[in-house]
Image 1 (cartoon, rainbow, N blue to C red):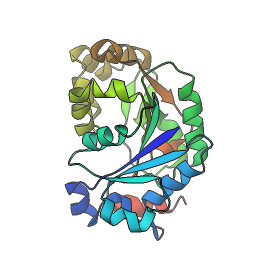
Image 2: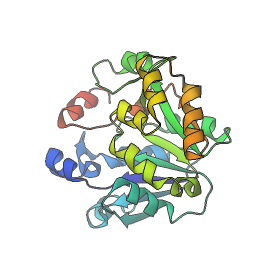
Image 3: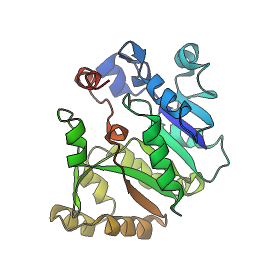
Length: 243
């Protein structure tokens, strides 16, 4: 299976870290190398493409991945550019800022997702599971009838289906840290159900399927490291304790 690592430099990252996340030092190793190593050690990933600052990344990871392509201005444009290199009906997409990720976590997510006949598989982690393993890491949680969940930083998708809902995805990416705004694009019924804790995972999947004409599935994972990313400079010190 092919994998894309999104390693583009955003303006916010430059202001917060002085560089793109991919090249932040985490235990004296560039952050992106943790994702690369986990994908390389996976049983099912046979090709890794990175989208980012090619000039800066090539000297550091050029011999560790199969291809590096220059970034665009927006995250979705980076994804679309990366997908354009593949004809596969399913690919894995990862961010570059998940230093605790493991090949076991990747293999488990892919094994579950490949058995589902859907266009998009997205990992979710129960709050209890996450906080049991990483008690002092702050996450954003969405309240559903089955409990409170945080999202992961991997996704399995069908490239052709993604291209057809580009506008909606742009909105969801822009507000990916805000569950209420993400739900807003699905309509008032979803918001009311979410606020009253009456929204189930199955119902949310149904609404997405109906609104976007795309089959999606939330994959509840027992590997919290999939959702352990770096948003702020203080996250580095917190997460380094767990390595």
